[in-house]
Image 1 (tube, helix red, strand yellow):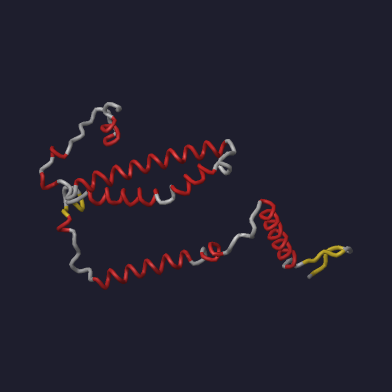
Image 2 (tube, rainbow, N blue to C red):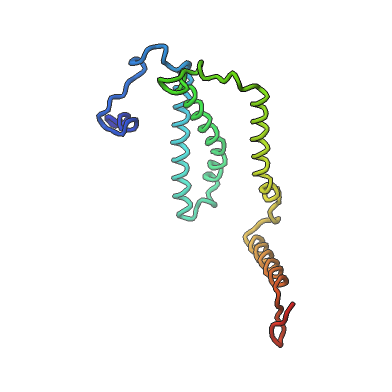
Amino acid sequence: MVPNALSFLTYRRWTAEVKGLDAFPRDQWPDNIPLLYFSYHIMVGLGTILLAVLALSVWLLARGRLYANRAALWLLLLMTPFPYIATTAGWITAEVGRQPWVIYGVMRTAAGISPRVSSGNGLFTLLGFMGLYTDILSPVWPAVLTPAPKPYSRQAGRRYVLRMARRDAAERFSACRYRYSPSGYSPG
């Protein structure tokens, strides 16, 4: 334990006073303290695990042993859902922790509703964002769905890259205004 570390993390001063829940009136406490407690610890714990696996992976990669280490590759594969879980736990921490306030000390969540916003407006906004994200992602899908050359090996990958580079160069050359012939350049 580092003395006064929470003071520094919260207020950026080593000697600041950090108040606990017992220093606040009970009606200003978050609604679900156990959920807040566990979601915060899940977020921090998974973040720490992710940083440790990142450090291990960088260390193995720097020594050229990451891709040959099956255990490390399995660990990286199994870590795939952890960032999503940590992000969701962080979101729960932020939303439950701010209760019962929309703006701390100014507006409570009970006063934060919008009576003039209908369900149709909410649905329209949701569909608009879905359409926007669909438009943004539409150029990506062909690249995602295009299979890699099979069977993939470094040699096959190099041949594929060289073939694409030759094709690109040929297309560029054929699009030139002037063509090369043994007697020199002539208009195409």
